[in-house]
Length: 222
Image 1 (tube, helix red, strand yellow):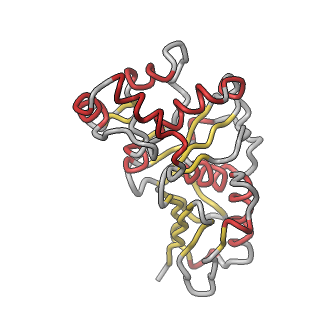
Image 2 (cartoon, rainbow, N blue to C red; image 1 turned 60 degrees about the vertical axis):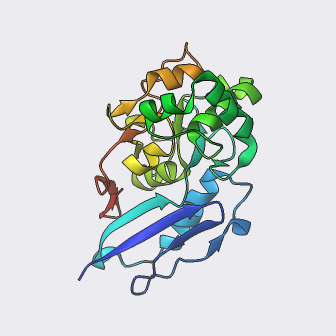
């Protein structure tokens, strides 16, 4: 019976289930460098090297929490990961609730924003690192980026940035996704920056379990 590799990305590194000869659990953040997302990609790829993929049916990459990765037009990460558990954006959560009350947020995106949500990370980045903000073209979670890199290979192969995808659960963690409308909330995004064209900034939301590509002939899914 074919097996599935389940990789879970977190601020502490990543873990994966032990499938047959596969043992890639327990990679700690100390083995990585300053939360640089490309170091996570390299560590995951190294953990998968030498595995016999012939008995594998699927690979999944998910996150134990959300977070923020910002990319240039070329798909290059512009700064270290901001994890969902980072509390730096607490003041931005308060600012969001000054702009609109809790009921408005629940009606619009189904959650009340706090420091863990991507919307507050974007607010913090916009006001705290304005020069870098001007370079930001694409936005996603750490798990979204790692999954995309596994599927696309080199980050220099940027012909299809639309291939960065996310699950409904991860979309909900952003406090930017409107489940009832099936789209990102323009009113929320406009709070961060009303002049930006947000149409291609964020990942495409696909159903949980959707096939998003392959690695060494093995399907990769949400």
